[in-house]
Length: 392
Ligand code: ZN
Image (cartoon, rainbow, N blue to C red; front, top):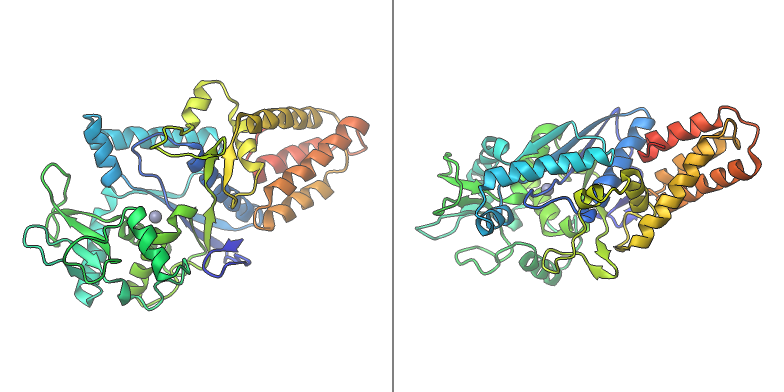
């Protein structure tokens, strides 16, 4: 798999139990295709490891208290807790319909408050964290210079870090910080915001420390894969790694950083502000076969920024029908070769376009010449189910 920290393709080489953490959703809106494509890529890793005989300890969080969720609840005069629960339930339904294997632990920030407080208290005690000089709201921040390897996950220069920090939820202008780049760990209670009593004073957690605590407490340090969309490279994954390093003295928190490309719509970036998000639940309600949707998302490489079009879905519907016709025949072209090609392409940084092309070849041969292999249809059907997660 491609590793962001080294910028190269490296073997993941997990032990008997592969350990993977993938950042979850902030449940203020339905699952859009960008989310689906990300969880689908990690689902293929999950499935590949299981096929190779590993146990997989897969952990995912749900950021069920954070600024975007609270803002949406306020806008819609909704209860933030109810909004979060409703969208989390819809997310789980969407994932199930796409046959994405669930994580072993799906942990909400709210249920993890106690463990997050413990982490922040330790960082504060060691001097890696500090309170801003603000008598009204003495919020706690992480001193990014407390981690010797800060910057090694993203590899970004200072200017890029400053720009992305400001663009992606950071607060460089907050007075009283030691450095504009320092990230929030604990936000003291404000009027009309939820807060939890703790030894830090009443407040709520920052986002990066949430993932750090949830990951470390379940997977330990040096786990196999930390993943998410490419917009999480910085600041989110950099800071989760830096918190963990300051806390444990160990580096890195994850041996492999895997990031998925962004999905646009008809050539434009898909975003809330443009109002052009395509939701999985909407497509399901419109009668789209989730297996065709899954196949359409797999037809391009997970790392490329790409555009969603109706044509992509039409192609997937045709391809799926062809594969279903081929496995319905009593005999087919020899299957062992196509199964080993499928495994080899997936092992090559999830090269799904090549994996799908190999299956197209097999289906084409089977449909035109049938073939001698009476076990082929069962074997190919099982391999497509197990490795690609597509039920024919
Ligand atoms: Zn995260």
